[in-house]
Image 1 (cartoon, one colour):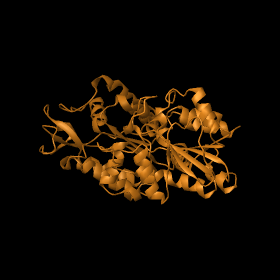
Image 2 (cartoon, helix red, strand yellow; image 1 turned 30 degrees about the vertical axis):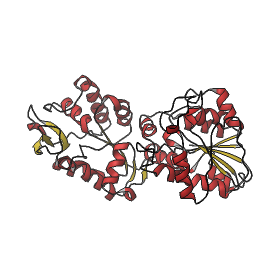
Image 3 (tube, rainbow, N blue to C red; image 1 turned 180 degrees about the vertical axis):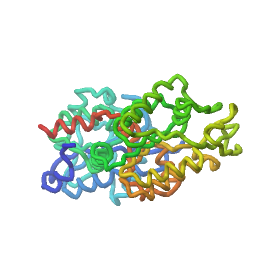
Image 4 (tube, rainbow, N blue to C red; image 1 turned 30 degrees about the horizontal axis):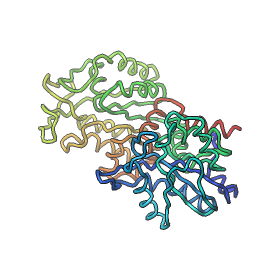
Amino acid sequence: MNVIRFSELCAQGLVTGKRVFIRADLNVPQDDAGAITEDTRIRASLPCIRMALEAGAAVMVTSHLGRPTEGEFKPEDSLAPVASRMAELLGREVPLLANWVDGVPLQPGQLVLLENCRVNKGEKKNNEALARKMAALCDIFVHDAFGTAHRAEASTYGIAQFAKVACAGPLLAAEMDAITLALANPKRPLLAIVAGSKVSTKLTILKSLAGKVDQLIVGGGIANTFMLAAGLRIGKSLAEPDLLGEARAVIEAMRARGAAVPIPIDVVTAKTFAADAVATVKAAAEVADDDLILDIGPQTATVLAAQLERAGTIVWNGPVGVFEFAAFENGTRVIASAIARSSAFSIAGGGDTLAAIAKYGIEKKISYISTGGGAFLEVLEGKTLPAFEILTRRAAG
C-alpha cells in the first residue's frame, strides 16, 4: 500500500519545526468514576508522539472518547484522565486544550492534547468547514488510529484531504503491513478462523474469505449454522436456519477451489447455558434435541490444531466456544496454543479474540495483534478503509 509514512518524513528531517497533528485512538475503557481501567491504547500511541517530539515538531494530539453529543461537552467526555496517564508514561506535562478548532498556540518541542474531537459539531459527518479548520492547524497530519480507519470523519478523513501533508503513523502503518502480509501476499496454506454468535453479522467476511483461504474454520453459533447446513442436528443451539443456503454457498465456493470448511466431528454440549452446567462430549451426529452446543469437541480441536500448526498464514477472529466458562474453553485454548506454536504469520483481531489471547498468555506468540475491532472486520470483508484510501490518494499527489 503506497502511503507516506511519518517515520520516513522524520528520517528525512522534514518534520523539524513543523506543526504536527496526530489523530490517535485514545478511547480507553473507564470505570463509573472515570478512572482508566486499561491503558493499552494510550501506550500504543506513544511511539508516534515520541517520534514527533524527537524530530523537533510542535505536537498536537487528539482522539475521541466514548460517545459524546456533538456541541454539548460534559465532564465525563473529557480526555483529562488520558492526559494524566499520558503524562505519567511520557514523564512530562501534557496540557489539555479545549475549544481548539480555531487555533492552537504551540511551539516546537511542545506537546498538547486536544479535547475530545467528537464534541466538535460536524465531526461524525465529516463537515468540510470543520475539516478545513483542523487542516489549517498543522503542516503535517498523521493518522495513527487504526480503530477509526473505517470511519470517514472530519478528524480522520476530512483533515487528510486538506492538510498540506497527510501520512500514516507507525501504528497505522504496522496494521497496513500486517494486513497486506496476511491477505494480499500470504504464505500458504492460508487458514482463517471466523467465529461468533451469528452468520448474519459475518456473512460478507465469510464470502470474501471463501475466495482467498485454503481452510475456513468456523466456530461458535456460526459453526452451528454450518453444521445444520451439512445435515447435522444441533438441538436447541444458537443458529440461523434461514441462512443455510448462504452457508452451503460458502462450503461450495471453498470446495470448488479444493479448499474446505471443516465441520466439527465432535462437540461439547450442555442442557443449560451456565458456567456450572454439566459438560458432555458427544459425536457431532449424536446431539440430542435438548442439547446446547457450547464448544467444539477434543477430537475436532486436535484435528484443527494440527492444521494450524502446518499453516503458512493464520487470520483469527473469534473464539470457537464459550471460553469464558471453564467447562467450555478447551476448544479455544487448544486453538490458541496451536497458533502460538505455529511458525505461521498470524494476525488476530476483535475484542473476544484479544480477551482469549490475554487469558492464555500468548500475546508474544501472535505475529500481529490488530488494535481495531470494526476496522479489522471490514478489512476481512474485503473493503478498502477510508483512511487507507485517502492516504493512498494523497501519496499519489
